[in-house]
Length: 334
Image (cartoon, rainbow, N blue to C red; front, side):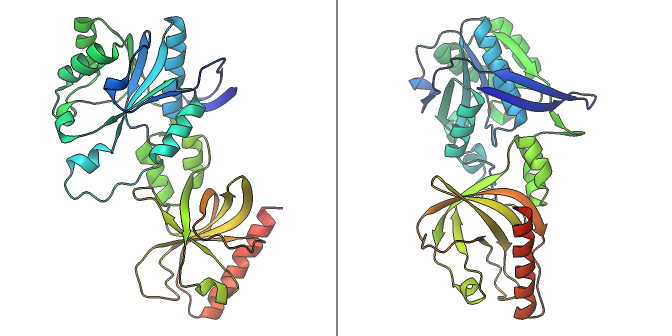
């Protein structure tokens, strides 16, 4: 299997990196640090890895390269639930690029060999950075090498940083490597920047940063069936909590239903022409499709933003615009 990653160095120069993953065993998943065992020379990184974007992919590539040299295996230590949910009382604003299941699939494709999904609790957050390194990374995981991103912090109050890790690597006798930032164009790639891009409808930046189109999944639930009366029957999607939904507007999408793929239009917004409600809806109109799919799960892959969500003066104007959107989609998919 061969992967190609588009990476920009500090000067903004585009680097096309090809790397091949040969004979790597299936990724092993552990549900706590205590489950992890029988791995020789673990080469580890840690973090949420939300989105598994090209920066994360570069880190995994480094893990595998180092692991091959030291006859070891690559390991990612991540956490569930997200620390913000645990540490910030009544926090409800989390917007994730990937659910845990999606992240696992993306990490498999990136070639990671071992994934530890450790339960994040308030008690766990109280370990100092040195306690965390000694008690978990050294005593339980037995790391050979620790690989971290250029701005990584960890431990209680995020007190741990690269400078401290240098001292700890000498004290506890492990190797340490820092990965510099990855850029798309002249902008650094981070999960935060990709989230901002999606909320602003900038699918191109998100795609370049992720190395793939953004997608979300949801169960088809009953709505008010208004679209059907307008000639545009839509599937209302119930999206998993904390999954980021891009900014309001109308998008061209590929719709995946099981092993089938269809062309579609996705509307995200409050439907200001037909209601005063501020409830946000995610509705997909599948071209040339007439089947009952209630309670089925659809995955939609974002391709292009057509327009913003807006209020029209009449239902006739709304239908006219919807027909224009459909015509644009038909031309796009030719």
